[in-house]
Structures are given as C-alpha cells and as structure tokens.
Image (cartoon, rainbow, N blue to C red; front, side, top):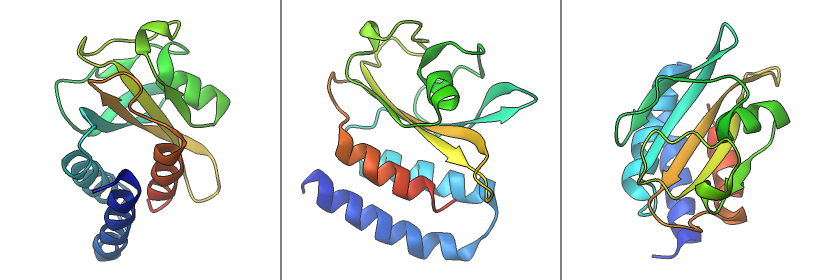
Length: 148
C-alpha cells in the first residue's frame, strides 16, 4: 500500500479511536502505538514534552529513548525553537544531532501545541533508512498531531 493511502487509513482510524477519550496522554499513547505499528519506515516513534523548560520523553515505541534532551541541541529542540516541522534526511548531517540509538538514520519532528497554540512538545519519528521522510510525512503527521 502506498504511503498516502496508509496515512489516510491511519488518520481515519485515529479520528474514531480518539473520540473515546479527551485525555492528552491517552491520545498521545494511541497515536504513538498506531503510527509505530502501521508505518513501515518508523523505527522509533514518540513524544517529548516540555516540562519546566526541559524536554522530557513521554510515550514512545521503539528502542530505549533519551529521557531528557539537552536544551537547544538536536532536532527536537530545533523544532521547538523554530515552531515548525523539521525533516532530516541524514541525521549525521544535522549539526548537534542527539543520537539515542545509532541505528537511526533519518528523522522528522513535528511541534505539538496546546489548545491556545502554545508549543508544549514534539512528535519525534526516526527511521533506520536515509531519506525516509518527506513533505507527505510532514503534512500527515502535522494533521495527526493536531488531533491531540
């Protein structure tokens, strides 16, 4: 199945599943699990949330995560600081990349906002392959994150 069709199916499935709870954490858990198991190129899938000006791991699927990301370093902080989705085709080429698992080769990070638009964290997805993410991923992951 093509990536576009898969995202469409995942999005439709999430819309139905997320009706069952308005709890932010429950929604993040469901999104993480569904994305991780339905998208073939997702190696690590999870959320980092801001807490007392620190970026702390929350729900995730995949190998062991970095529990806290050093401030203003790495792709997640770049997304927080710019308040935009960042697609990295080769993590080795991203200055300051934080490697929680050396098998990660490419990454996409999508900002997470609260109801008033304040950034509260990010969705972080890694792949074992170079060039795994593109604007199609960015579009759909932004749309999915907005469901929280």
